[in-house]
Length: 154
Figure 1 (cartoon, rainbow, N blue to C red):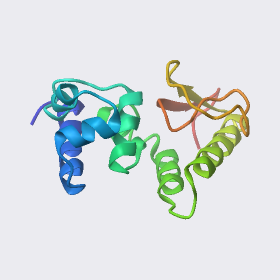
Figure 2 (spheres, rainbow, N blue to C red):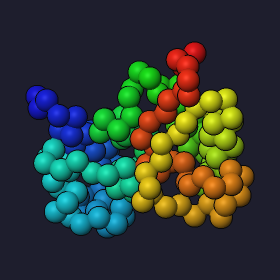
Figure 3 (tube, rainbow, N blue to C red):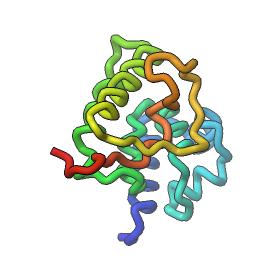
């Protein structure tokens, strides 16, 4: 097995794509990435950005955070509670996409208020309209890690 997380990510993406009964080309089109690029990701030859992972996750209707962990963008142990919370919110079928984003923004604003910093990709845009959490970007894109300011978590 490859020592890089990218291979594990690629295998997982291929499995999820097959479970969704999508061809490589169909998933690439739905995610807005090129067919060759997606093929390289599945074969473990490329490490996609958090933004690309979010697009692929949305196309597959799976948690972007799961892909972030598999890609090594999020630390599985340290960020488990946050990832699980986000996954539950994102998976809730009773909420629409806008409600999910607002709920995630509120969640992050509380975490920030309690001393946790959220690192967000600078180029990960989002159509949040600036409400609920002020100047924060869409929080399901590009979360690269969380740390407690001046203290150990928990």
